[in-house]
Image (cartoon, rainbow, N blue to C red; front, side, top):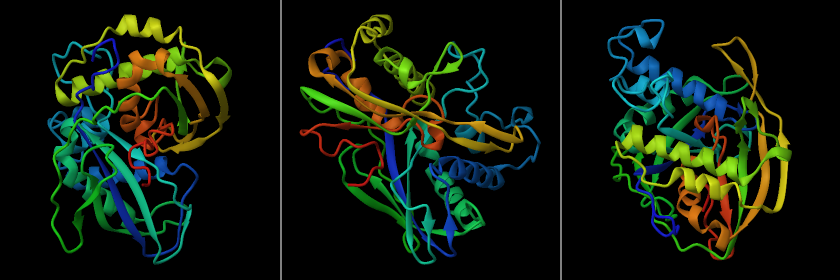
Length: 331
């Protein structure tokens, strides 16, 4: 990535959409990513765990197991990044499509997800666990869904969705690819499609404290870590210079609000806050040019915290980029 904002970032990934049919009535909460993420994690662990130890770090297979890689994501031994942290950024995000919360028997429901780098080697595990989790029951009352088909975007961002699996056909995924970088428009709006959770000095960033500098610096670091841990590549960028420039950018037409959310944590035995910023803000091309490759790629990997639950998704809106919704968004 160069300072002109004209070169794409190499981060191979793949976007998928699962189509389900409800076997019984299903009632999902708003922003159902927490429900999906919890059920998916439990299903994958049931499927692949052979030691049944109570805590993954105690297991001999901790650094080779499909579950621990996707959901625990421990930094490799000997790494020079995040050595003091228990986990690296997880190699997937959920893409919450605009679907009704109440699903009647026989109705269809879709869920999008993106796998990053080597996580695509675990697609079969991920898809099986997703189907199993849905059939076991989701949401209030434990209604069931059955996965009928799985689609993949031929090239990330292209809008060309192809079926790669169905009940009567084997799984034939396409290779992951780095999203192509389109020409930057003269001006564009970033619309936060799901709540954005950022932290500053240990506290959630509220709308009144939000600035482009914090948004961009968090996103740049996230993309750098995803590339390092899940593709083995270092992101070449002037991190300090770009961050300084980002803090000088002024937002236009900022219309930001706070969305209060909570989820129940089985691990903590209580409800935990999950609120974040919603709304939109605009940027002008001249100011935004150095940041364009990062902003474009961020559509696929989301920003901020709780991305594995679908939070931090955003769209880039402009007349010349009519289909620049977040990965997994409807055509």
